[in-house]
Image (cartoon, rainbow, N blue to C red; front, side, top):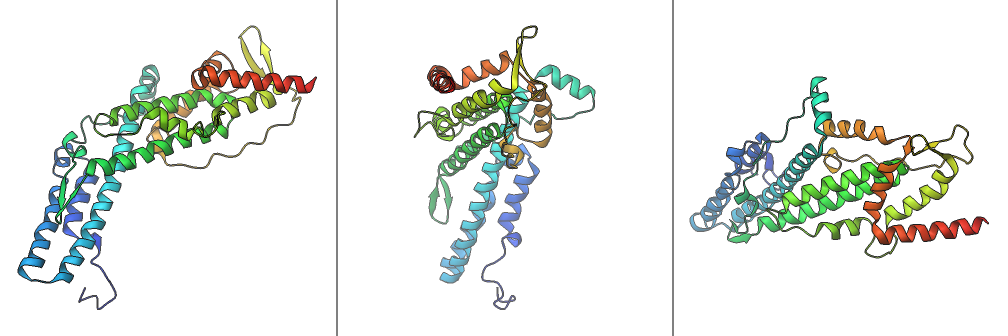
Length: 315
């Protein structure tokens, strides 16, 4: 700080030895090093002890405290982000169709399963990290960020469906199940909120009897399926008519989002996009089954009631 001659008010975190060591462990993804992730932070405890008991300088301690707070915030941010991305990729890899994986690997695609036990359970469950005389609940901080990440992931999945036609309901159900599996695996180590409660919050079922998914299904059935599809008795499917009987619905374009909020990685996103592309262009048993599972008895009853009201208004 003296050499900088006032141009810097704090020692740069990029030049901090504890952060360099911590960041190296996070970036290498080595399971053997992950257990030692918190060890470099003891340097701050030693430095603070020297500042107060040997040099008797409070401003030294204040600088150390400010840097330690920043480093710990960055540690929680990066660790929670890596945890969520790892378990989302793990869940998506488990749910990926085995035959599809075999055929894709024959074609040269390589997406190995994530390494098991990359993050030590003892690290994730830490509830008493001693830093500068304070006891910090690392598990609680990680749980908070993971809860927000899962909620955002559910919101992105629902918003992606709202920007698509009704054929995307199969993909929506799969995304929700992927998040459910990710939540289940993380809940073994962290105290997370109830998944169904998070889904209801993202689906706007907390404040309204009609969820976002149910409203979009109703809208697509009345304004797209009824007007632009005809039933094919040979395939038991609704297919689009050659001649449009109504104007094409204008839908919003889905906003871009990070890969971890969908399937975990760009490679897995491409795989699932190819799989669910097979469910586009028609509406059949897979779509109606997904709608029934997503909406449940109450949601289906509300939709049928609204459709009957809509039909009566046309007579």
